[in-house]
Amino acid sequence: MDSLLKKYLRGDATLWIAFIMLCVVSIIEMYSASSTLAYKAASHTTPVLRHVGFLAGGALIAILVHLVPYRFIRLMSYVGLLLSIFLLVLVQFKGQSENDATRWLVIGGVQFQPSELAKLSVIIVAADFISRIKDPKKDETKYFTAILIMLGLTLPLILIENFSTAGILFGVVYLMMFIGKISMKKLGVIAAILLGSVIVGYGAIKAIPREAMPSTFKRAYTWTSRIDKFFVSDETKEDKYAITDDNLQVQHGKIAIARGGFFGVMPGNSIERDYLPQAYSDFIYAIIIEEIGLFGGIIVMILYLILLYRAGRIATQSPTVFPAVVVIGLSLMIVIQAFVNMAVASSLGPVTGQPLPLISRGGTSILITCIYFGVILGVTRQIKEENNPDDTEMVESEKVEIPTVSLDEI
Image (cartoon, rainbow, N blue to C red):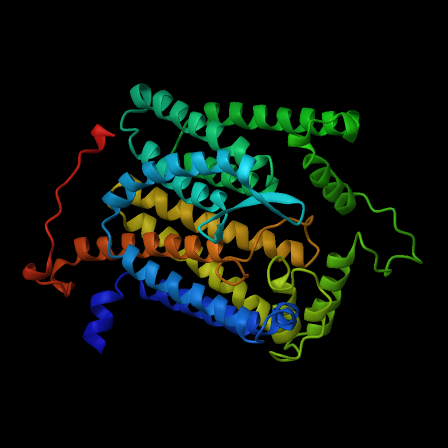
């Protein structure tokens, strides 16, 4: 059994432990948080069994992906990028709406979010472009321009319906470019242009009546409304604790956190799961704190921080640029998304639609997050095998010869 685990679960052991613990927390909390879904289902166990099925499938995908050499992941990301752009365009015409946002496609009875595939592909392709900069004087402008073109094709398509996802993805790629030592002058210009665009866009939304705005951009009024509610409060002392349709999620999230205390009311004893909209998704972190307290909330936070810490250590051990940058990029995407979700659930940020990676309900998010872990673990496996060739369990007869493809041919 031990040799079987060593053969198929290679890579960084700490990351595997963090991955498994997040899956365990996910199953326990989804069983409790999905009570409103259980009431509507034919069987009370249907929602949690569906969630467990996605986690099991995702774990299998992570195992398979971590055995694939990252040079093939590098090549496949270009296919994923083209496919995601096509699907992002398709979702604008054939997309399915949920919670006033059209983010989902249904093909063959399967519902998924093209933006999840786009995030994965954009990060890996960006890492490839950054790794190709051998001589800053000759290569930097070419590949920096390529990254901007890629972002220009994908981000607007995501932004139309999902402002927070587009913002996080841009932020991750921006940090990757900073880590990849793209010149500060170029990064400064991009930051200035972005800031100016946000100011102009916000002003336009405030100046143009909703009725006069093209339907494609009407989602923008939801963003500005949420930002205004977070930063500008007109509540009086009397209605500070009143629960209305506008603040339903925020207020019940606060109640859940207040009930949790330090050690919580224990799993299965949550009350707010029956009142908090999206308790199993956007606000599941509030239910985690209610049930296992601030102590449990900190443990979950630490699990994500372990991922970021180990990613940094892996990057320093990487012999080449691409695996280092791709590990940093993927880990940043998981951790930043997690902290945005936590901030929303604890009323430290405006409401967004970001799930808690690997814990919230959502098949597409779970499967893609498992691919993130698979790629990161695959990089650690290869680095370990390259640095310690005598420790690998593979024998020569088990290796499969795969024809190599030159990256210059892409």
